[in-house]
Amino acid sequence: MPAMIFKTLEALEGFYGQQEPPWPTDPYLHLVWLHCGYPASDERCAKGWESLRKTVGVEPDRIMVASLPQLTKALSPGGMVPAVRARRLKDVVHRVIEDCGGDLNSALACPVPVARKLLQRFPNIAEPGADRILLFAGISPVAAVPSNCPHVLVRIMRGRERENYSATYQEAQQEIQNLPESVAARIRAFLLLKRHGQELCKRVKPKCPQCPIRNLCAFNRGHHRGRGAV
Image 1 (cartoon, helix red, strand yellow):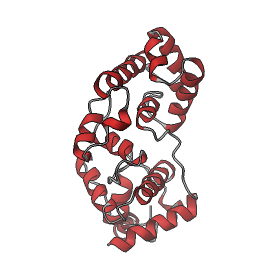
Image 2 (cartoon, helix red, strand yellow):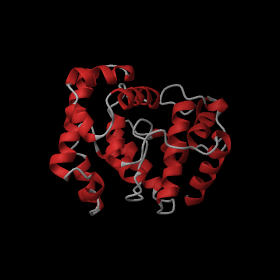
Image 3 (spheres, one colour):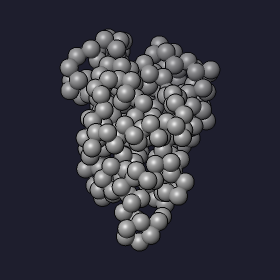
């Protein structure tokens, strides 16, 4: 149902407006951002990022010369385990310098499977994170899906997500493949689905009565048929 995903995204954009990424799109800076907050959220990462940027700096050389206590203090506004995140951030910079010659962008100029594996060598980066970095850097129009809410598109298109996370993620990717193979189209989808998952289509207790696409959504239609509206 390729047309369905286009209608869905149009309706979501009409409701939420155009979305912009709150994180830096440069691959190295994106990795730094992801370690600036925990538990991961845009708000916590933004707080940690601003603190790090103002007190230590985000450039590789500045992070390398900073002490772990300095980094820990800088990352503290981003939430829990700042000392753990400080050590991981040191690891990120070390890998960029040692494995990528200090230039992650150039290192990622390779076939997508190779680039994905390279990114997965960094701390806390699994396949969803690697795909997100490749997409937002404009390196490849991969079918990236927001890792914290892959259920959103699966619910809309198929009715209910799987109990298995990997299966749900793969089904969401299959739906994304119906979009044009362009970076802009897939970034737009990623951001709108992420916003919808954060605001209304929550994993637990989704707010279906408030949803702007409830008449398009297979999940909501299933509730109407099975046990009444959510």
